[in-house]
Structure formats: structure tokens, C-alpha cells
Length: 310
Image (cartoon, rainbow, N blue to C red; front, top):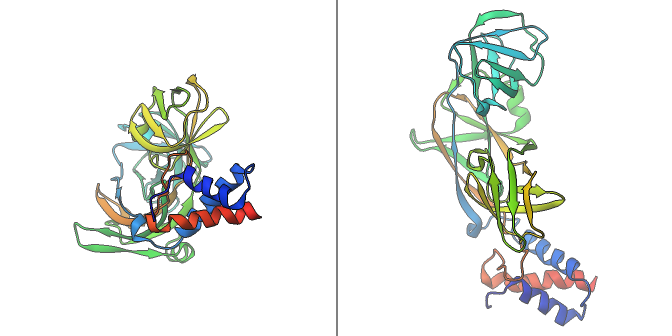
């Protein structure tokens, strides 16, 4: 079977069905057929992934106040990268997510601190949750190749019963699929030219955005584009053609990737490797080639015909 472009598949569906005025529905049917074909594990779609863990930050001391979200540091160098990580004061069991960075000596918690007011307290800011690739459909076994150890995956509820408030620190032995959490990135502005597929940023730091990559969505005005590659801090290539020129516009990057939680809490910078089945490239432009072995391309014609005849 020859390699078929998206436009060729559409043309054959229309020629066979004689339906010529429902292109949007036919395109939807072809894309859904591609999605159904790739639901099962396919070696063709296997990719490599790497999680680079972060060491806990425990420099200096902090002042925490009962019923307050503010944490004040002494001898600390808090950074904006700590937003989203977890904070635990002294030897308390409870942990809190950091919701905002104020300065090198002040951060804000997502919820009010419920422990006793304390000055000069030791603390830990740690990261045990990591975003998986945006184009991930299903991940396989995580493994540490430095100590030749596979990481055991545990079901969410079972883990919460086993470790209601995880505290152990060390090399991770378990992984837990923690679901998703919709975050956004809106720093800077963007520009783009009609009929091109490059978005240019100003005051953006896209390579440093955790989880931003192929398959992420970026909204400019009312139009949603799909990220193909993050080329630099100020350039993103998208799959679609830009529908109309925009300049110095506000935008939103949507970060709804799957999140994996590691336990024990990582105590060092370390690479954890894994295989995952990626999502297929979306069929958008006429010249797009289905992300599927060529011998299966004809099945997409059948998928489009089902909708055309309906």
C-alpha cells in the first residue's frame, strides 16, 4: 500500500461515498480511526523518556506562622522554580504546596500553615512529582540504570494507605500515577505570521517550562495550536498553520500532562529512564502523512467512510 497524504485519504473517501460537503466530519472520522488503531501497544510508537530528579533544598531557616500562607526565610535563596514543589517544616508530618514565589526570602503556600508558629525552623522544599511527556499515551517501567533497579509502580489508593504522608528520602523505589493537574504558563507575549507554523516569544523561557513539549496546547486569542517542537526559549513550531497574523499578543500554554509521584522522595539529581507509547501526530494539513505504518493507511479510508455513510 503506498504512503497516503491526508488530502489523498479525504479525496478517496469522498470519491467512494459521493459525500462532498461534509469535509469536517470526514476529517474527524479519519482522525478518530487513527486514534482507535493506535490504542494498543505498538512498537512503532514506542519512545524514550527521562525524568531528571531534583535534590531537596534545605539551606537556612524559616519562620512559619499558624493560619498563615507566608513562609519567611533567613539565609535562603528561594527561586521561582520552587513553585509547585512541596514544603515541610521541621519534623512535622504535614506538607504544603508552594503556590507563589515572592523573593529569595519569601514564598507563599497553597494552604494556610496548620502547625505551631515557629521561628528559625529547619525545613525542606522537595519535588516528588514530575510531569511526564505531553505526547505520552501510556508509560512503561521506570528504571534507575545507575544502580540497576526497576521502580515498582503502585496504584494510587494503595499507596495513600501505605504512605499517607510520605517522608522517607533516598533513591526512589516506587512510582505512583498521580493523575493530571492543569497548570498554565503565560509569561511574555507572542507573535506569528499567517500561514506559517512558527510562534515567536518575547520575554518567554519555554525550554524551562516543566512538561512543555510535543503535544502541548498553546492558545492565542480564541485559536488553539498544537506544539510540534520547542526550539528555544523564544521559538515554538506548531503543527497547524497560523490562521491570522498576531503581534505582542497574550497567550496561554496548557500543561495538563500526566504526573508521576516518586517514593522515596528523591534526595539527589538523577536520571530515571522509561519507555512510553506516544500519541500519534495529529492529521491537520493536507500534506500530513498518517503516523502509522504504511500498510495500515487504507484502514483510515474505511474510518472516514463510516462517518460519510452515517
